[in-house]
Length: 286
Image (spheres, helix red, strand yellow):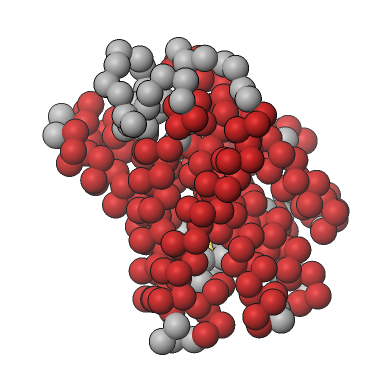
């Protein structure tokens, strides 16, 4: 049950819950940080185990994009442009997640205590919230291709052999959950809200709607076309059905971010990709 109090909400979040309830605790940035730490570790270790040679090719844009989701590489490129060394930029994206969430936690002025027992219901919640996306994906893409119905939103850019495709999809799906939500929801929506509401003085409701729609469009487009190292690259072949599904998924994740916070949005995104990879492996043996 939502409660209107004077506490300062976290960036992008539109709902305040009953103080110290499960919904209130798990919406806090500190919970997002604690819950997603394991995901970050799995992604980093998984990347190294699947393709350790990629770590020695940090200067090659194509090599970096093979196992690193595009949004992760964007963070690396930004830091390289600023002037950080390539050794640093390989650890900087996960560090950026930690620092951003710590900053949001400090500014939110909410409690820092984390109950590990909340992580189980959080996981169940993320899995349950991922199921509507699976159903929507199947419904939208079924008429085009049964195979594409399951893999339509897999965000992996890996160029691996078929034998390692399953684990590549799992690892990059986890990375996509963290870094795509960081870029397209936490960062982009907040920037757009500042632009529309604070600078252009638009109505708050209109600012929210525009921010969600623009972030969703860009989220969907970046699976097909994206800039890397100053040049345009092509990703997955453009399909109107897949673009539409990812657009709707982007809106869905934005609403989750606004209502439940970054941790649940990123967790739901990661679990969607994990479930899609498992269904792809079981149903289509791929």
